[in-house]
Image (tube, rainbow, N blue to C red; front, side):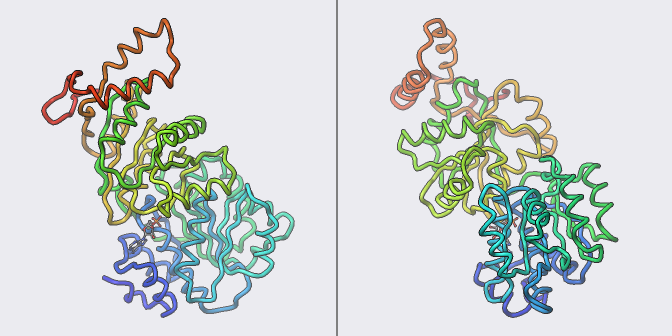
Length: 419
Ligand code: AMP
């Protein structure tokens, strides 16, 4: 199977070739033909499946004919990063066409976006808030929209954008094609889809389980030893690009700073950073300036960086869905990756849910030579409370130089039976 079967405009095929795509991914195989026919689509597909090109390619095909200068395709996405990524895909795939794309999101000045809209564009990729803002003062005209895409609809609803989406629906023509993508399809999302779509074709990729090309491992550890375990893991593991997730913005910032002090090439990506600094982190990670990116869930949505060898969940995510999204950052499309998750005792219920979705038990592993006894020492020494940096440094030294003096309870394959 190749892209020729879709009989796309030669200028679009040139874009596909320029990106090095040779074989359509399963979602592209299922969706492109249907979208070209003008049908509405209800797509269940997680990130990393190639879903962006699945809707961008047929949209470009539509826009190569007909008038230029009107907003004819509107793609709504939950985060700036995802919006930027979709715009970039539209620009890259449409590089030989005359179709233009503008991204519209908050956190940056409106001026440039308004100016770009004034110059004229056929595709707008937008986050709901800024889009409504610009529509409110007539900086954008949505009355010519022919195709509306709602991407990561479940996430948009989680983030409280449902009322905004309903408002946006009132601004676009009722006669249009609508493509609705969501990684998960709980009842509320399905109801929303039913109320928007007309006789849709359902396209489902995978059983909403984490990508199969990823191997999953749990590292049981106490909260207080996580950082030491992370450092030891990074030392012992042959890693390429590593994406580390923390639960809070502060932890992302502090962990990146601590790794930086240890001379790792690392950047943070968290919601307290300005849009420009976030983009610098993503670009630096993508371009190889940084080997490690420490991110929070919200900030990491839509990071499109290939070749991530390891995703490390420094903190367990809150939901199975969030786990799936994080893990979707490695093993993208045809590549393989590893997912390490540091789990504390309290994380067990969620671990069981993830295992249910995966349909198998996840391997529990203990890092060879790691001083898990550090916890007992930590408890004993709590009376005189050493500062955290000292504690970490001394544990770190132990692991590097005296690990053999601290034999671990391990089974022969370094896997421990329980958390
Ligand atoms: P997405 O699920 O749209 O975020 O895409 C994930 C990654 O797959 C992106 O880096 C795309 O550039 C890449 N990709 C999309 N389609 C293909 C394809 N047919 N062959 C190879 N890579 C692809």
